[in-house]
Amino acid sequence: MKVLSVLFVLFMMAVPVVLPAQSTGEQEAVKQAVLDYVEGVYEISPTRIEKSIHPDLAKRGFFIKKGETVYSPHTMTFPQLVELSKNYNKDGHVPKDAPKDVVVYDISDQTASAKLTAVWGIDYIHLAKYDGKWKIINVLWQTPPKPTK
Image (cartoon, rainbow, N blue to C red; front, top):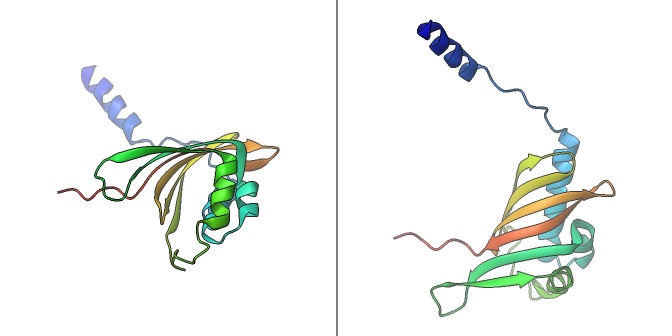
């Protein structure tokens, strides 16, 4: 009997779990919201920020100040992000091939999560659907990780 129990458990572990897949359209809509955010900053386009970010945005992150070795915390609101997008690349310092790699981790019917790798570092992003459109509501970010020794 013990052998049958073990075989049953092994069989169940080998059977793939079938979860309802998100439509390609939802996947693309989440990715597009993240791209509107990063490209809005890169391309000095506050309208793309306003399109992709919810007004209740909470953006929190960590960066290393010039001449220091430890991370400092930083928070940003929706109005501050809109203002930043007007000036961040005004001098053209962001290269044309700057990273904007988006990985969508999970999509439910109302919420989603993604990761963005951008010129400023890594953003972990939470999105929610408002009036049928995906909007970024939370961002946790940090500058590129310190090299390990």
